[in-house]
Amino acid sequence: MKKTQAPKTIAVFGGSNGVGRKFVKQALELGHQLRVLIRPASKSKALEHHPNLTTIYGDALDRSAVLTTIQNASVIFLSIGPGSFSSMGNYPTSKAQRTINEAVNELPEGQIKRMILVSVVGIGSSFEDTPACIQFSGNWIVPKLLDDKRAAEDALKEFCSFKNIEWTALRPAMLNNCKLTRKYHASESTKITMLNAMIGRADVAYFALEEIIEQNLWANTPVTLTCSL
Image (cartoon, rainbow, N blue to C red; front, side, top):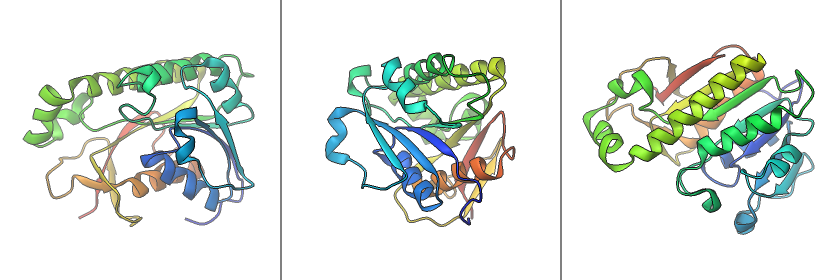
């Protein structure tokens, strides 16, 4: 992916860990302006100083902090995992998504062009595409995680449809910390096996940035992401 000719201002939620941190690193390398909300408890994981990076310390359930983060942004990227925001409980994504929606309502109409949510495989029809071990986990080990991500997707879809904002929900399979490969498979419906389930957080971040730069490739749809065999 080459540096974009039209850098964007991107508001990032969940940028201190996981896919979000990979996203921040890659986006800065491409010349984008980032506004990243980090809770005060994560200061130990503070991002490295960069002239294109503005860090806001606050809580993703605080509409004032969220509003400050999305000022001047045209794209919103949300990647919050279980327990990332302890003040919101163990499964905070749907609450954060609704708070973001409320804050976007206070912005000028049309300012936000795209919203991207990192969800998880196993939502909707993708559940039937997963192997038995993942289905067992979804049903008995982390059902609240799936419920939270499902509610977040629903909130994203409903809000963006009403506001005419393009959205994408990324549904990666099993995440790992492998280096960026740029080798992945994206589909609305993909049969997942233990051979293709693993995908690197760096590759999920890369896919999200391609969506932001290229635009409209996977607009207004959930996307299952797996490794490319």
